[in-house]
Image (tube, rainbow, N blue to C red; front, top):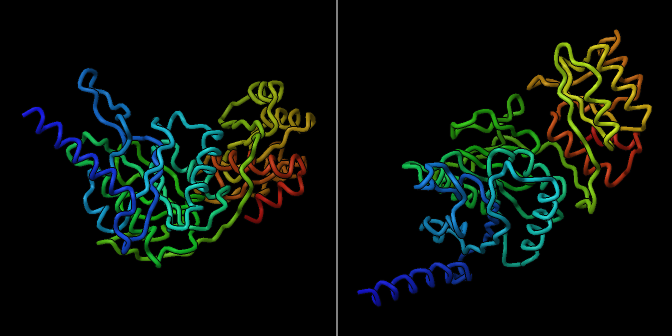
Length: 351
């Protein structure tokens, strides 16, 4: 009995591994790059907590996947996305570009945790060289959940890679059947599968029964080389009664740039204004965005700390790109153009 069971296991995993070797010449090949995240996590029976599963080849339990494409697995990491860093995304970008060099591979799906998925997908969109479709997906429910959303999201992402209706979108997020621009997507709920939204920007498309329905075209297109060394950029979150101390600390501890999540359409109080002046005198680039979810940032108000006064000081306005993504754009841009304020301003003004 044990010999039979052992033989069965050998044959089962051999078959699954064989599925990764493009056995069907009539099917296209899609790369699945795994980085970890809830989609690849299970409940630890000892602690009851969700933890990364061994191997990360969760997709092998989706039979329909192998009926629509040959799968090439590219393991990158197996971590919760709260542990991701811009340096890891730089390496991920290189890894995705490398697998897309294979002429047999028509596109890639990147399985990523949702905590930093919006930022990670945007970093890939900024830095990937290949123009083949790249879709980032994940899950809000672990593989141990009675109703996991990961398999469905992964399958829909493969459908998107293969669809002629999904061309020229750059790197996108595909979650809960909706397709979102990586630049505009944001996580809006901590536990619900319908967590990603683009707010007033809307969705790019929707997947149903294996078909992609196109709603909108991609508006913004920016590409930069993957930085070998990224600039040190911090984020300062403004609030009522904030002082200049944290800003001065960032400057004195080597910040090359600081993104200010300001109030309203782009305003800070007089104390924070003092901190911004201190940073600018030390040749630190300041980019202004807003803590308000939607709407633009504009130099409207002329009082101390108002948008108009900040613009006169040399602050760069991020317009519609919020804090975490404005930080990534500044890090990548400064690695390419340095502290040339005019070039940086043009990058943020004309994406």
